[in-house]
Length: 132
Image (cartoon, rainbow, N blue to C red; front, side, top):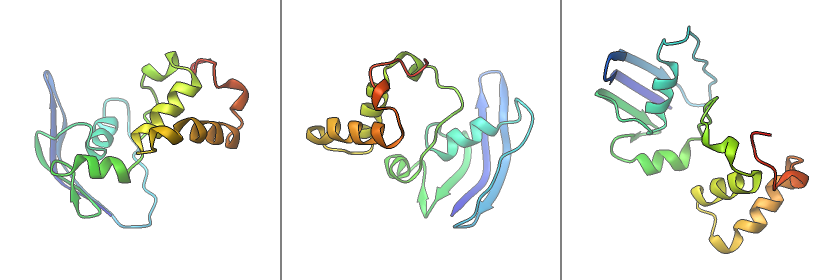
C-alpha cells in the first residue's frame, strides 16, 4: 500500500510537485501518465526514497520514507528509463552491483551473477558494456 499526502518537491528554479496526494491499495497496478515535465519521475524518486520531499509524507507498507529509507529500498524496486551510469558498466558489474545492493553475501555474488545472467540469456554477454 502506498500513501502520499500533500507532497511538495522543489528544484532550485521550479516546483515539480505541489500538494500531491494519492492512495494506491495493496495488490493493484497503477500507471503514472502525463506529459514531460509533469513530475512523474520526481514523484517516483520520492516514492523510492531517493529524494526527500520539501513537504508532505510518503508511506509505503506503513514505512515512512523519510524515517526508514533503507527499509523502503529493500522493499521497492525502481528502474528509471535513463540513469546513465549503467551504460558504461559491463553486464557483470551491473549484476554485481544489483546483488550487493540487495544484500547478497560477497562470497555468493559471483555465483548469483552467473545464475541471473543465465536465467535471462545474458551469460554470453557478461563482459560486454550494458549500453551495447
